Amino acid sequence: MNAMTEIETGYHYQLMRRAIELIDERGQVLSLEDIAREMRLSPAHFQRIFSRWAGVSPKRYQQWLALDHAKDLLATRHTTLETADAVGLSGSGRLHDLFVRWEAMSPGDYAKGGEGLDISWGWFESPFGPALVMGTEKGICGMGFSAECGTDDTMVDLVSRWPRARFSEDANALAPFVAQAFPKDGTQSAPTLFLIGAPFQIKVWEALLSVPTGHVTTYSDIARVIGSPKAVRAVGTAVGRNPISWLIPCHRALRKSGGLGGYHWGIPVKRAMLAWETAETA
Image 1 (cartoon, rainbow, N blue to C red):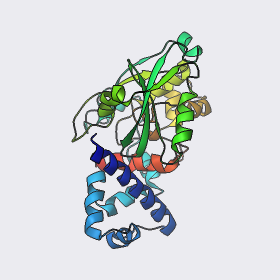
Image 2: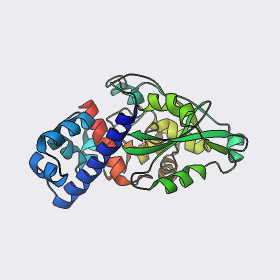
Image 3: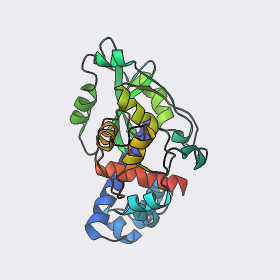
Image 4: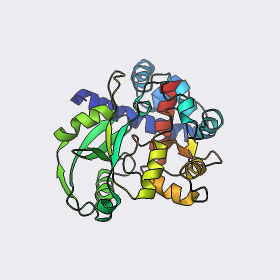
């Protein structure tokens, strides 16, 4: 992304975050004039920048940000994973539908806490605010979002995953991977991921990778598809420990009741991701 695009995408997410707060506070869909006034922008300017980010009108997008959007998704776009390839994997053409390339660290190497591993890191703007991206020569191994958690806590969180690794700031080395993660102008590319986790965690993350864009699944569905139907709580923990948010789409995992469940980087980010994908695939 160029500098202007980075500034714009971060600013647009902050508008989405404030929109979520307004919708929750008012309990209703706001008119274009009302929400533009709250954002201290003219209606025309707000409509223009909003549509550039979401691709739909503010009114339509607000409907997808509503608290019951997760329940609607579960009722209309629920995939049981076993049939994920039959419900639209080639539909939208977005990156999660492009069979992300990945490989996993061996269990023995994982047990060493990242010892001997060189990990580069850098900050980038994303549609969901500032993103901390980490990677090795094999691909992206970490992605966290700081809009709700703060930059310091986000850094500490990801670094703690691999306490014996060597970390160095090198945004330039990661830039090609990030360009794949957040393609511009609908450009299709398949990002490369390097999964660093315990065997059970990797099974859960692999299951998440099979959930198509614009669809959702449940923790119990994931538990069943990985052969551990009674391990719903353990699945939830593994989903929460996903180190590569967005690319491994843990935001698409919901409670069986239709509740959002938790999200490591903040529920507003999860809601924005789900609404953004709904807009992309509508």
